[in-house]
Length: 293
Image (cartoon, rainbow, N blue to C red; front, side):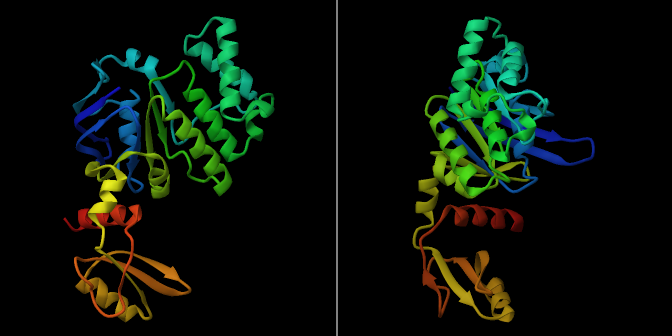
């Protein structure tokens, strides 16, 4: 399944331009959409999910005009937004049954089989009769994936799914996404670089509603090979000097000192060591160059 987004633009009534002539092609795979808060990721996801219209542009899903044939798209779509509403006093099994009926799965036998399979797939079977208000953050996200998988969608959109999860729940959730992504197109929208590095064969980085970079994570890393340098800086004055003279990608505190990472074709100077490139370097370099333009 191919999703082709062409020239998408959206400006909200308050003047915020969320999408700016954005074009992107997503194949039948797990696709990572990286960007800072306010980059336009959620606006793009809501537009693909037929929840809002753009000012201009088009979206094609295997020959379906997403902006005009919304009902047809919704039959193929599973969507987990950043925040999704549920009836907190309902149990997971009752809520899934209710949502399955809304999705058009009216045959009770088929519905029962699908709901039970999804509860097992998301490791919620043992808690199926508990009210959703008692679920942990990770359990709620797994329930969100269960509802998104109702009716066997061919396109699944998940928006910031691991934000706020503890490390153990995050791992469980990523493993679940990985198993789903082998069979359908999954768009993973996030600002967490590691989520994309661990899951996605292709990705795009967006900011200010524009695509800054698109490609395979491994290809992006290879493009920076041998050009990332690191140094621990003892003083703020030295840090500012390096920032003025070199292309600084990021700084991190290590034991109260600044570890600075620089992009350069050759050594930036005394004390710098060549280090392996990481997807964070790709991400921050794209953003810093965008901010300077």
